Image 1 (cartoon, each protein chain N blue to C red):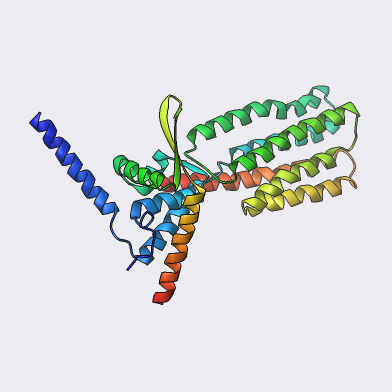
Image 2: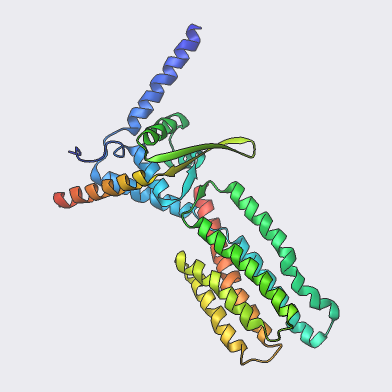
Length: 216
Length: 96
């Protein structure tokens, strides 16, 4: 009993000491340095993993390149390649769940960004429906216009230039696609997927891994 | 020397907590402990002081069957932090 009380007292005195240590008077300079250090720590940890951008950049690149090749190969089975993005939704759900489980902090714009990308996903599926329903030819320009919206918004809001320029590139390719014959417009989709998502995804991934290495 | 500075914020650990929370929408207790390098007990004490002052909100829940404490700065906390930084800047300017 005495031993237990002694240990408790010791722990308590250590706790108070530690507490006092944390309560020490700060100078103005120290306070500003502490604020700046903590803000930059939180900013550094608030990193996108880049996995979603890599997934969609990769999927759209594969689909458009296979479609382009199929314009010459003419294999009916390869026409189903555009179902790959539907399957990729499962991958996206898995990435989102995994990231939300691991995330220990939430950024100010997380909900807004999530809403923008979810509405983009819904809009893409709706556009696909209308394109098939009304048999719209040369629809790549419409898809490219849509690709540009969340990409540019993300780049603009997060001051991330690769995505900002990627979004702009989507709109430039959308205009160019109206002057380009099929199947060459598919190469615009490939380029857009690379510039808007895959390359920014690689940059984000590299930053994320670097920040995580620092935190270890 | 620092009579005019908010005493709730003018503490090493509490200022560190609020500086992190001002940068994000919300952060878990484990994250705050990791970044401030404080002990769990001390961090709890300081979080409670901030909560009592109305500067932060603390929500307790379960994540994957483990208890999870999430902290979030309140509008009062944001205002107090902004005033604190302003006071600090004016103090440093006067000193210059």
